[in-house]
Length: 357
Ligand SMILES: N[C@@H](CCC(=O)N[C@@H](CS)C(=O)NCC(=O)O)C(=O)O
Image 1 (cartoon, rainbow, N blue to C red):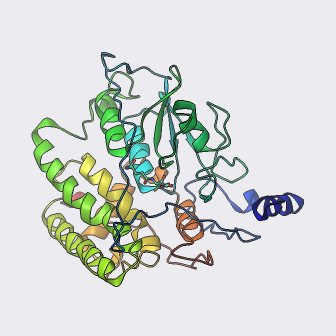
Image 2: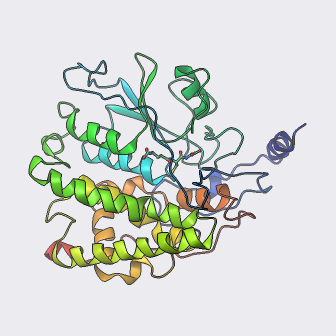
Image 3: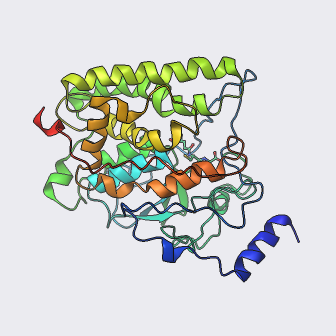
C-alpha cells in the first residue's frame, strides 16, 4: 500500500471529519485546522522556472468564448455552463465575484474542489471537506479527469478556474480574466435583477484605463506576489518583492483621490486587484515573504479592501480558512512542514469611510 493510500486508510479509520468544527462559508469565526495525520508529499503549483530562480507562469490552454449570438460555437444559455473553482485561488475567485455581481448564481453552476492540492492527482473533489463539493456535473474524483475528458493525453497544468460546457462536454475556457469578461458581457439576458443585468465592469469609456491598470497590477501584484513567493534565488526574489511594494504604493496613491481604481465605479480592475489584496496579510505577507508592509498599514488600500469586501455579495466569495489552509498546507516546497500560522485575524467587516469619497 502506498504511503498516500495508507494515510487515507488511517483517516477513514479515524473517521476523519472536521465538519463539526466548520460552520458556514462566510463565518467570521476563525476555523483553521491542520490536517491530521499530516499530509504526505503534498505540494502544489510546481513553479516553472526560467533557469534563474524566477517564477514563470504557464500559458492557459483553453481559450474559447461564449457569445450571445452563439457564433463562437458556445451560445450564452442559462444552465448550460459550469464553473470548477477553488475558494483558495485568487484567479478562480475573480470569476466567482463576477458571477455574483452579475446575478448569475442560478445560471452558472459551481463546484468547489478540495483546498488541499495533492502533488500526484492535482485538484481533487472531496465533499467530506466542509465548504467543498463533489463534481456534480461529471461525477469525477479529480479535476485532471475533467481535463482528460477533453484531451485524453492532456499533460498541461490542471488549473482552476475551469468553465465547462455541459452540453458539448468541453472546457470552454480556463483563463480567469476571460471568464470574468464573458460573465460581464455575454449573460446580460440572464442576471437576476435589472441592476445586475445593466452592471458593466468593463465599460467602453474606461477600457483603455482598465487595460493599462490590469497590466501592471497583474505583473507586479496579482502575479507579482507569486514571483516573490516562488523565487528560488535571492536575485529573483529581490526585484519581485520590491515590485510588489512599488505597485502597492502606486495603488495607495491612486486610492487617496478615488474610491475605486478608475473613479467612483467598481470595475473589473478592482475585482482583479481585490482577490489578491484579501489574501495578502494572511498569506502573501508571510508565506510569500511580501513583508515590507501589510495591507492594513496602507490607509487607503485597507479601506478600499473592506469597501469591496462589503460591497453586496463580494465578501461571500471569500473563505479565509480555505485560503490559509490551502497555501500553507499545499505549497510544501515553501512551507515543508505544512504548519498553519496562528494569525493574523483580519476583520474585513470593520467600518471604513470610503463611501464618503
Ligand atoms: N491563468 C490562470 C491561472 C490559474 C492558476 O494558476 N490557478 C492555480 C490555483 S491559484 C492552479 O490551479 N494551480 C494548480 C497547478 O498549477 O497545478 C487563470 O488566471 O485562470
